[in-house]
Length: 326
Image 1: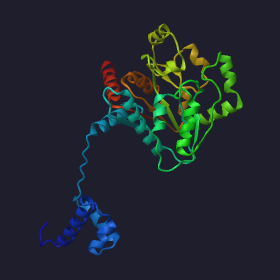
Image 2: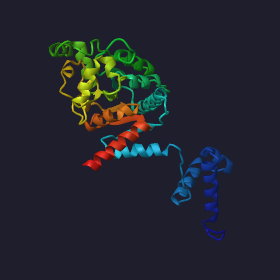
Image 3: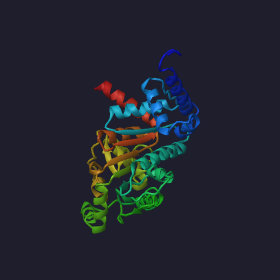
Image 4: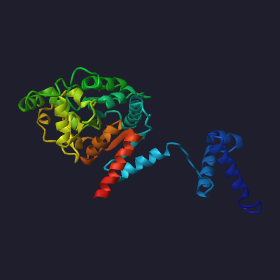
């Protein structure tokens, strides 16, 4: 556009406004004061500049590849949301805390006043809670998805539910029952006890469910903190196709709950009950979680997933190999 054009002065004014707003970072009200214009006039000039194609925004980030991985996961799975954090090489604890912070932010973006949040125990869920830093408090109710195991802070789901409620400014309703009953009949009886039934009924229709995804293979698996078993039994579980733990239930590669006697003695909701929840967020850290994550995805149990980069790459590579085999 040249000086003889009838729109030249307007174009110059638009350019000046765009430079001040997008390059120098001035507010529209500040630009209005500088040029003796109304704020609405500045807003119209910015809108006109966008319409004329004068504004081109190019965002560069060294984390763009993580966003690309997130989009690939969403495109190839049942997930509607994914967050992938960098992996701290050689430092699994740091990686877990990074995943916990990312999941904490996702949780804060998701929950609203009046929501019910249902949670499992586990190291990952504990990391989420410890990294919660809300700007404002929320009137929420936190409930467990399982009974509890005394001993470690992350196996006591009542403790974690209480901590989460305190962090958010809400209240907790607890399940005063063990995770494992002695028999299936005893389990059924416990599930019909009024206070236990009320909490689990609330958990079934929670607005948000937050759960860890457990592995069966590593010796440090949290499942063995819940249920210490001999090494031979651990190998047996892996040998019969059990690859994951979800809500203390043992899960096969295809996502189905395994036909394992202990599953029938669990004082816990079944993973299939998650279908009644508004949004289910899974949290996992470490490459040993890749196969369990894949099983949870095969079962359709998760809506969103937060994990680290190395774990995500392993999940994506396994997905690619599965497609090639098919």
